[in-house]
Image (cartoon, rainbow, N blue to C red):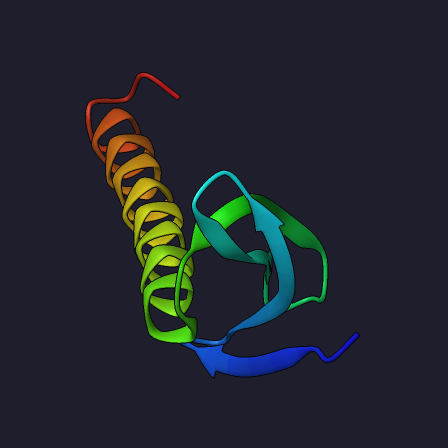
Length: 81
């Protein structure tokens, strides 16, 4: 089974041909340390769609991380932590 891979914002995305529902690819998203942070079983019907789906997941994770850091900084500034 062929596996496709690319880097996106420091994360690795691996696609695997996998037919489920109307999808033809599954995706695994790895953080910069190599840990799997998300498995998407029905990632997309084309490579392009599957990569786009996984990239949105990376963007979500990065936005969440940034938001949590901003909240921590605000709490420190207010002397709550």
